[in-house]
Image 1 (tube, rainbow, N blue to C red):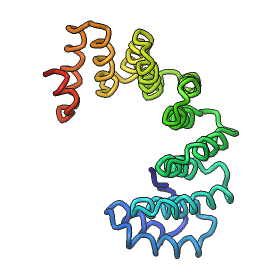
Image 2 (cartoon, one colour; image 1 turned 180 degrees about the vertical axis):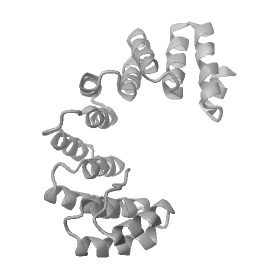
Image 3 (tube, rainbow, N blue to C red; image 1 turned 90 degrees about the horizontal axis):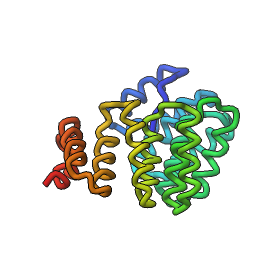
Length: 219
């Protein structure tokens, strides 16, 4: 979930301070008042939904973001957050529909396709998830998260060599990505390249020393 840091009023700026401090119960009424006073302030609507979601009121948050998108269909933060809310509620088809709507009129669609890939994968639609991640990479060449997630999709289908290529591409774009390095180690281990896998796990542990999975795989 994400907040919107653009504001049209002092009241909404005050509420942002509350959000930063994790004081969500106090932020909600302030944001509700700000929304009534400034109905065209998109940041207020995004942040009201965020505060509600943080309080576990996910359905209410989803309703706020849905209404925000009725007023402003291309509001990226509301689309992203609403898709996450639907995912949390297990309403995957609705999450995909929101993301598909968010694609309209966009030039850089990497983040949207990447989110869509995750939702499709959770639905067991592996071929469509793979296609979505490939679209993300095509939209933004060198998009490390897209390469990494595509690699995971391929790896879970036992397409190990293809997965390795994607993890390497992610590391080329972001050499210090501990997740891509860890995943590369996992794929190398599955391939039987034990020394290479140990090297990648060790590098991942150096970058992310608290990662329990790395500790276990290193033994």
